[in-house]
Image (cartoon, rainbow, N blue to C red):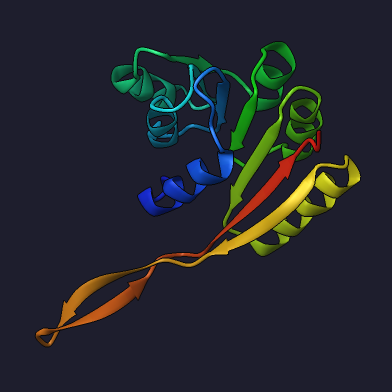
Length: 165
């Protein structure tokens, strides 16, 4: 499992359009990088993962306005209140989208696989929240024979859904 790259987190936060009074849920928080960044912009951040080790590690670095849960994303989304949701893990995304769409103003899912992104778009359309999908390609520089070359990172599909008010 790989952590969300800093550049992708920057795009994610811009697309989330955070308001200081809102609550953010990071589903599949893994290292907590997204949660830590979100804690700078949101009133409250919930970090959720089913991996006990990941949760233990996030608890060590969490910000003051963060709460960490070891539970399935879809169970959390049914039980708790939030305004905006980031889905970083793709297990059970159908159930997570169903649950989150009942409460969240905005839902963003990041995935690495085209078929999964396509299925999430299809599900978001089905529940009437699909807004857009981005394909994010980032390359980082490195030195090659005394000059600068670029090494690409794996592309990410960012699927964005929101309630239209």
